[in-house]
Image (tube, rainbow, N blue to C red; front, side, top):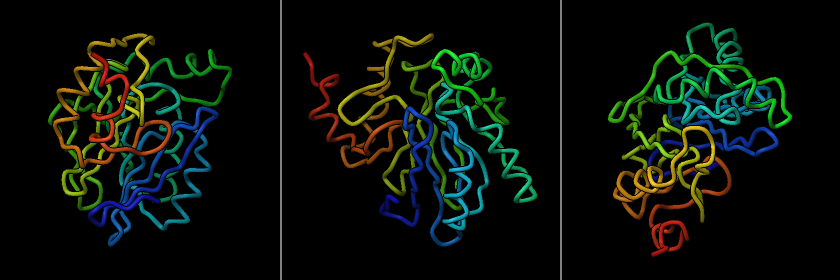
Length: 224
């Protein structure tokens, strides 16, 4: 579990053979939170929620690729049955609707089954706000890896959930439908790096990092 400078906590739950970083974001005091990018292995996510003793208020999706969103629909159903109330799916930007509707077909191309299409309860746009317990996260639209990719940023905690926009030492692929390298670099340099070198982030795969570390050493950002 990753601590932040506030009472916002982050428990990472890697899922699918692609080891995608789903996470449980929650408030330590109230034990209320959200699940980000439940790409699959819903049972594993539910077990982690039970172990933490967290009540999930919503599901947040950074973008529409199957390994990030393919478990959202069954997770929503399981949580609503268990908790007895609505658990809305929020995000990503509507630009990824075509990816969310094709999740089963996309997963099949990777030799995987059991992933479901997603219809979010709320599409997000740049500048929106979402709540996780008592915390407010800022929504930053960061296209390039996919047209509808969004980042969730907690200014209070100094932390962001970035999906596949940027990684420790790398950036998101842009050879998938709707991807564009120049757009992705602009999203990172114009929207994320200005948030501050001290801001930590959870990428969609691999270890956490900070924007300052990536500004200084990420080969995709330091090349002339």
